[in-house]
Image 1 (cartoon, helix red, strand yellow):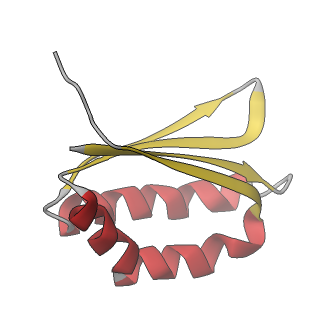
Image 2 (cartoon, rainbow, N blue to C red):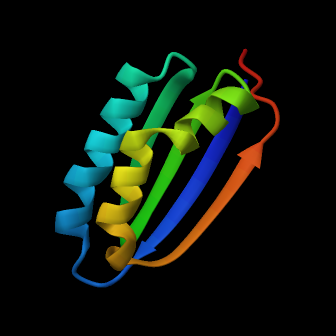
Length: 97
């Protein structure tokens, strides 16, 4: 399995509009993609315009399918004007005890 970590820095005042779309994206990924095993959305009161994602996929092909999905493209189009910065990283191995 692989993990994908994403950090969004939102334009100030966008969080209230962004989060329902982010929750829908997580729900769609988990229910529509057999290769998506985990999709956590994290926020911190000390960083009010930041959203951190932790996603786990079966493999790189499953993540590529995620990126090509209609719901991913819809989400991206819906939030593009809310994002000041976005950093993403793919972690090649998930180790679970």
